[in-house]
Image 1 (tube, helix red, strand yellow):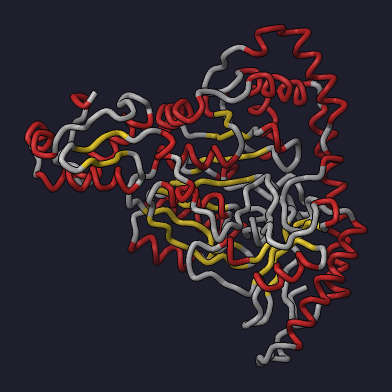
Image 2 (cartoon, helix red, strand yellow):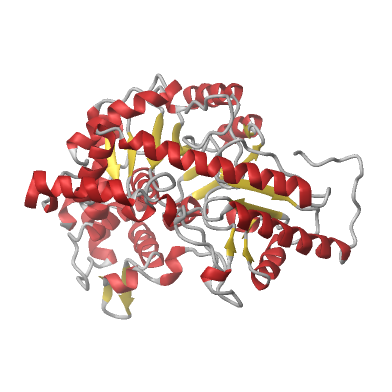
Length: 494
């Protein structure tokens, strides 16, 4: 398989990066077997017509990622999978990590789950799962398809489901052909597939600051250069984006334009237009992550960037985790045609295909119009929780605390006065029966310690009222113990 490696000396990519990328792909695809020996540096450099240093640098990068190991006096060998999947490669932040559908928890001193008011997790409560219709449609699929429901699926996804999604997504003002839709096993896998497709060692990716930590973790695993763009209440700072585009050639910009995680902010139409304009000027690819636009409690419709993309510059990710059942792990990508083959290969390398039985059931959800009932139920439930949350925050929080009611989604972002630690509030909250997400985990760099994220996903209205009183008490106690200068002219944004 080594013979298949071709280096382009006319490319602007370093030769060692080209060699590293091709060797990595051969290892990940299983073409180079575990413990097989790679060519010696001298022999390989001669065969490729490159300097010894090129091979050395490529091998060193592979070793950094634990894809190979070296034996003194023997050479370089392909590492077994148990070494590749080293725990440190996951890039967890101080044992606190927020996956899109798992619970945020610091186990130290934590109460039992049923004793905890959990404002930290973004996973829906089981009472919102559509168990009865799922059971009915599952049986219908089994009666209709029999053993075929458990057979191999195409990597791109079950064709009838892609057809249903193509029709459904028109309600978002998005026109997507059947061949542009790729089914994936959750939004997290979607992000990972896109990172594998587009990112090589040292490539630059732009992200919002703060952003979803699962995406940061994926980009770090690809050894990417992550550049933060500050997010404001109406979207990222486009002047900052424009400045950084002139300095960095980014592979893509990852963002969440509607009810962003963790802030809940939504982009103004003016900023959406500007971002698409800059994408044209700088030939910039945009990855749009949309999991919460269905949960809109305001009067204004939230348009996606994809719905306004006329040049194929936006790849759109939509997960069903927050509005269906997270454990089913279903999401989809809408892909411009020119990227289709590369992304399909990355999907195939990840897990070959997404669960076919679940895809067939979801297809019936769309076809029998059960989906609209589920969306309506979830939206009404979350809107009630949201209204109680906002009312409780306004009634109980000290005036020093700032927040913007997002009018949608699941998250509310609190700004504490400088010097007050969100992590400390989190730790005290666990001891008193509430779990919250300290803002520091949502930053790639220059972490801001005085932020908190509250989610309404897994709390009842009664728990919200009780939990916010506890949180307010903890914050007031912390404020009374701190010496800081508070500007009385600054009023909270509520």
